[in-house]
Length: 158
Image (tube, rainbow, N blue to C red):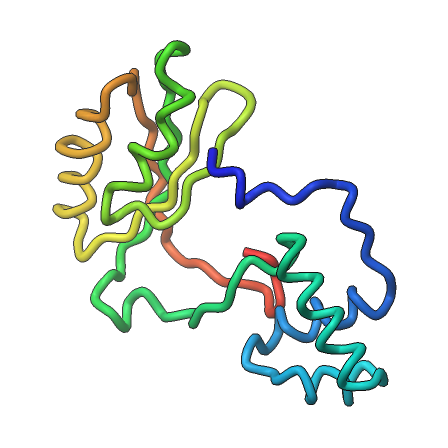
């Protein structure tokens, strides 16, 4: 798993940091001066806090949340994967190289990974599972749960 996705538990956030993070989770387009005003700190403090949150990996980046169906990907599925134990360490990179895979998580339990896949149709989803995922070296089996509906809580980390 890429190291840049892991944040050390040693990163201590105080109330000001938590307010900055909460505001950015709801609206990632807020400027640092806007953050300063809303949190009640000086601009210099807000810039220093923001930079520290980015440098420490708490804030990993900014991106637009796009409605999948609006860009031609109305079918979503969560797919659990079991991998050969000698292969799972390299599996993350293999899985993220597949265009339809939007997210990868290493899991504990009966499966080794869960992936979020977006597709244009059920036929395309079938092809991703049978022609792409199952051809990844080390994948033993998959289990697919097609998403019938989905929602995201405003400000949720994912």
